[in-house]
Image (cartoon, rainbow, N blue to C red; front, side, top):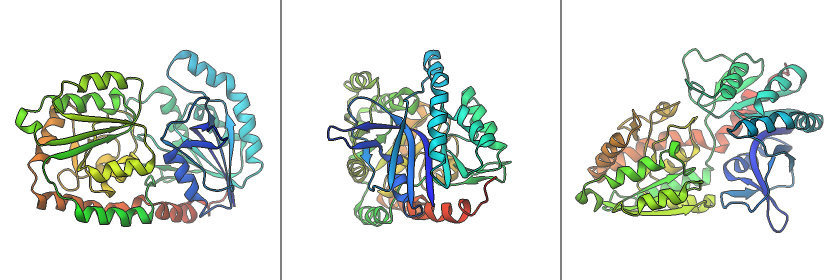
Length: 379
């Protein structure tokens, strides 16, 4: 069976002509070859040098087809989406003629016109993946429209978490991010981990305000001098247009921050392995971020926002800690709780995490795709 995946995933061309794309998505697609004969990925291509957070496809059974890189928040950027819509639809239509089924990854700017197009004009088998917050109250207009269209679909929609009044065709799927080998490696690393002092923390994501980077720096800056002595390294992994501001803000914090920039998947896993705590005090539109389960696999206790479906997986003071409301004061409070944990309490939190992790493997995800999605008849 041949699959077309349509997404807004950024791709780049390296100096030797290799096409690379954002690692979490490319890695997921690479593993889908265990289910599909071949995959065509219709996605966006950007000029410039690829960041370290990209990777190449691992098989010639995956073909990349480019569409214009569109999207953004300004009126002009949204106008560009409309301008390029006919060209994007034409490309998608051509690819769909070559495959047996499709997956459209949403929410995305192009989803505003691709969901109606696929719903009303395409008869092929397919499903939609909604990776954002399915229950977001104040979502942007484009997200609300896409969610409304997906709630009234004949095709299946995979979403993060479990929700009240969830339509029957909307299936709760975990975001895959771990191999069985990763699970085994994580289990070995966790055996050796102790909550020794000083304690190291990490954040992985876009360096921007809504992701909580400013809250993290301010929280550590406001710790008392004796508490700061208990902090080892605070690792910040990722890039953003305000990176220099955050570096300046951290200089007088009295805490050792390391700004890694974008890293390869292997290097991100090494940061998790060196850290005791994973921080994500986000107010962004999240589903269940893959970085949480990745960090947990390597023995990091999550301190994360109680938004979207995160609390379905993270139980406060059982396998992590939840922030509600998401404030600097609450973040400081939870950091102090972590600092007072005994090694026995730390190990108990980590051991409770192991029960979840197999649900986030590519093997588990692929089995569900094969059994719950591919046996469906085209609408």
